[in-house]
Length: 313
Image 1: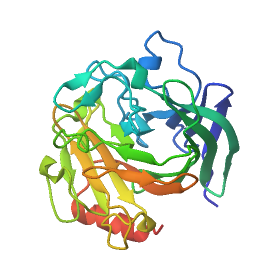
Image 2: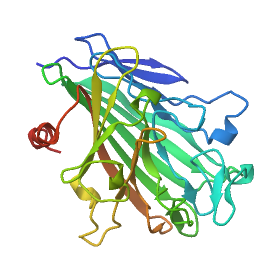
Image 3: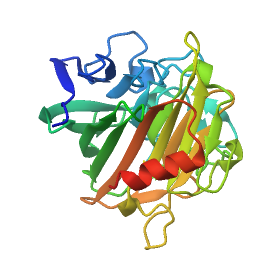
Image 4: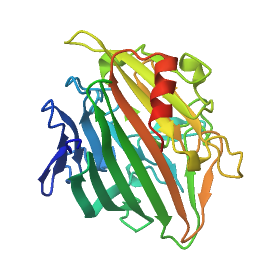
């Protein structure tokens, strides 16, 4: 039987997940309140950091000087019915990024429904609430983070992130991005990964393309490979849509497009609203599921495809 990851819950602060074989802490899920003076401006929300490979190398950035609100792997809403749950300055067409603290909101931890590990898998199931600046309840989220397929022989493990967001307003919630607000190639919103500074100029791959020019494109998966500082070697992160996400919009759903940069920093987001706003009716629920494969080494396209084919949803 495959050994299960080890969970340590520091109540009111974070949950860490450790691979018992290597002793490496694979991730920390931080949900406790932030107390720094700039916390409100950074749109406080739960996040994953650090995220590590099986060799122990960190593959997330945290509060970089260029964007203090970038924190590892987190769910964001950069433009949400006029609110900014992303953090920092807000993009306003024709004026650029403005310091508008009255637009900056937050996501708050409410409770955990499950924190458990068995059968080779760890589960963190959480309830959260989403709020604009004035603290009103705009949305409720059911979030499930699973750590699984820890495979030393492959040098990889996987994280599955599922979020179901329900609109609790009496009017529609409109998910947008700086691009829907008028800025080109800035369609970030939804799940967002910020890589470490050393990963700048990393390699970007999809099944049919390569390079940062894939920004705004559509594909069932996108991979980012970076080279570490401090230790020799590379790491590859593969971001994949679950089949039900309808990444191409072919089934009548809202199409997803990749936001990806390797300059001036490493970042990936399967955007919920790259070119067009996504409208969520009152009482309706938006559900999205993603997989993030964290691998040691510089994986090639064939290697990625074989891994994904062997690890069905």
